[in-house]
Image (cartoon, helix red, strand yellow):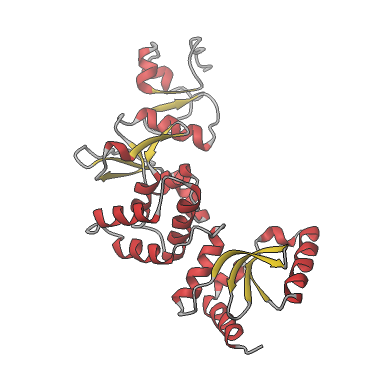
Length: 295
């Protein structure tokens, strides 16, 4: 049976409450031309991730907000690919601790101690503000990834400082993730410019190696030569993280010229790739040998 045409003015996505107010019957809402992205919602068209999440927030209580990895995804913080997918596929929805937890399939619900100031609008989403989201993320992220998130916050959000994060960590000192927050603040560096750089630095420092300087400009006299990811200045050792884009032929050629220029100035350059994360002990051993080499 062909469903009855929808009334004019029905938006592409809507909640069951909105549909009832517009006069749609329960039977019409069960028709196969309408999808059910979340409990209590309907859609006439395929939805992008953000559209689906906006629809979900219309269906939950007004005091509900994004938290955890879903807040991180909306805020643009560097999650691993599995968490990024899960953040949209199974949204984390929070409510103030004195409210009833939202209970719906297809999402994970939490009750959190928050102030009104810690809930903000970002790109149309009601979400934890960045620093408060940092506290929330400390409960679930491994150290290297959490330091990368901390670096990204310090680099990308002028309102977030290490002092502010330390104050929040003290406020939530009894909450899960306290040791993670403390160590991340010891390891963080706002000069780090990519998650993988941060994660490499954490591997090396946690293994007892010296703390490298991040994103250092190298000059030949007054002439700029390169901005390097990590520098062990005393050993004149440069550690570069090369992502997949470095495999482009033109980029590879530029990298070789850059490396030759750095080596002509007396620096040694070693490259780290994503495969090094499969065996961090071997990575540490390699950097340790280079640091202790008298050349």
